[in-house]
Length: 93
Image (cartoon, rainbow, N blue to C red; front, side):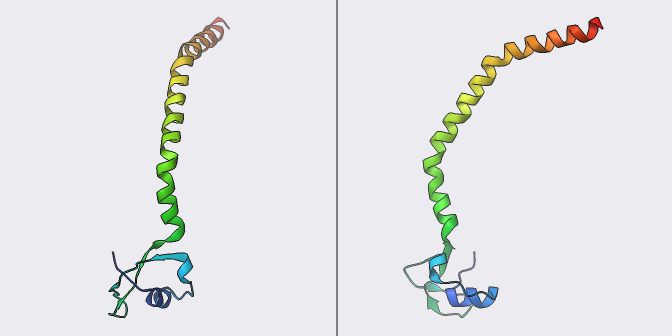
């Protein structure tokens, strides 16, 4: 992935974003836009926090999927019974 400093990034994309929008490296890296050693953009801030937040959500999401699967298995006989009852009524008419 290409590394760009904030100034080059704004120049390339024709924007005027501040450094608050991005997570910027603490050490100097080689900027491919201006060919200088500067702090570069690592990621956009909202996506970075969403990436970290998914580790908190994962156990709850997994638990919800397991409960849903167990619920579907539990009501499967009832659904099959209703299906066969409806099929019998259609065949009677």
